[in-house]
Length: 433
Image 1 (cartoon, one colour):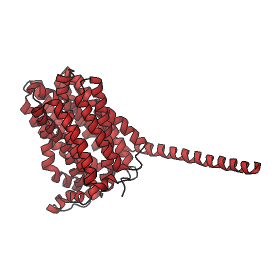
Image 2 (cartoon, rainbow, N blue to C red):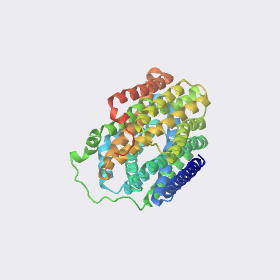
Image 3 (cartoon, one colour):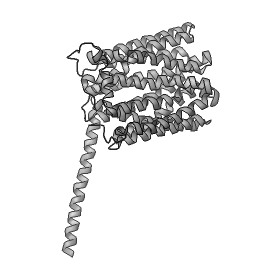
Image 4 (cartoon, helix red, strand yellow):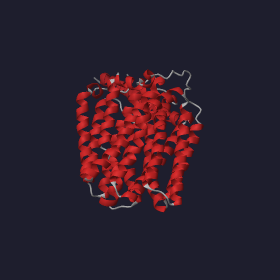
């Protein structure tokens, strides 16, 4: 008996030592993976460019939203801002994808960011001169929307060229967390600078776009386009055909489209800030930062603890939570409660984003990635910009609070319907095939 116990104790001790060593090796491996990402110079420059453009766009959203509502006092005009950003993306999607697959993606990015910087310089100049009106703002936003239509898919298509396939989900989470950090800083900073002077806010936005263009020009990695496929109708529509042939990708992209299209409550934040919560432009900036605060916490968690299984099911749960957060925000008359609801929907949204982006990027060949990402970006842009138009329109018809509630309930209904329509998506365990 004593010998037996001693043997068991010795074996247990040995097993514990092996387990401890395995845990230490896993911790070292995780640290090395994170370190290798952080010390990847092209990825660092990519990160700086993305942060700069995201801060710039969030500042611009606060400044434009506040100014156009102050000029018109109409939620319908807030919807038109979203429409002005959506139309170029819709009309240029097929061309954008083909360009991203035929030409140097870095050159496309820095050109777009230069155009965006010059467009916002025009806004700053018009404010300084004192002749800004809603038509001027919408015209410049339309130009910025055209540049953004080329920038977004190219940005997403470039990332897989900077890291290995094994690191891609972690890189997506890291990129998303940096973007969400910028989304937190951008609106608050934009509201503060706009309160000091509109020209100061627009001038800062222009400087950030130009800085992003510089960062992209310094990237020396990324696969160069070696074969330029002739432009044909088949090649133009290849991205759409590829997505249609893969139900899981189609389901993930379309789920995001309809969920965020219906749940686009952020377009009505200027109305909530002025009429319901009674806060100024700085408070509006804080409201716009709240979803990003929740998203940042979640994306940092996902960067260190990647999703291991049940990704399809997790994505559907996240979309339902997003709808619940939207309903809570719509009913809230408390600034603190509104911030909590926005943070919850932001955290849920980032789970869906990480799964969807990783799914699309890992299951798409690089030579097709520009066109597929362009279609994906059109869906994302549709859900955001057209969602803003939908929110403004329904708010004009039914009132602000009912419009938000309709969107939240609609998001939950869409998630339930998509489980039935795309059962393969619900059964996905990992993003790799």
